[in-house]
Image (cartoon, rainbow, N blue to C red; front, side):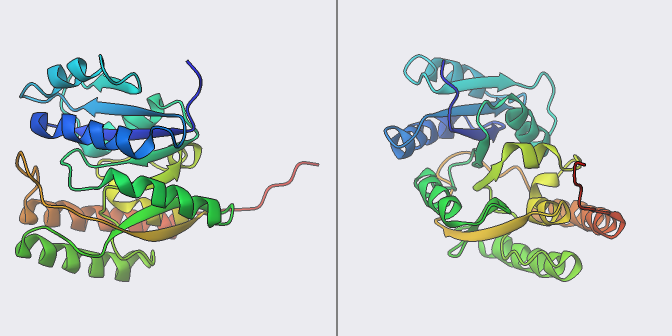
Length: 240
């Protein structure tokens, strides 16, 4: 099998009704445009998500399926997929179907136009389709994060992103790190760009997060990321 130019990584947990529609949308957006693979990471779902994915492989040769033998969380699932990916560039999508795969070509176009130092193109949900309470919580969290981390990113929590695999794997790993990728990329010396993208209502399944739980974890993580930024040290290197 030829090495793909793009790997689309999708972490899932109990999303059996969203898997097939999303796979179909990904292939519709990318087939004929470039060589790609789809890497689904099932985070030990309790429903039959894994079986649905296995059945989809028959008609989707681009699809690969990885399975966590114990539930490990979204950041670990993303990292599992990125480590297994064969392309130099990674696109990520949330498995709930709220991200639109048709936006992946938009991110690829932004990459072509960007300078070499940009290693992350982050989706920016300019028209959120979540509940009022979730939108309010996200706005509050983004404001605090921007004040503490100064990452110049209006929507760091959007699941659709495009980034260089090597740059991602060089970042410090911790649970929930996927929410802080712009700040972590900037800490590593790279530039990031936010790209407006579509956002959709969830049509099946239920959200795996609640506002209070996310806020409590987020406060602790923010302090940790801020500490990493303060304690980081970069230096230019030349071979002589």
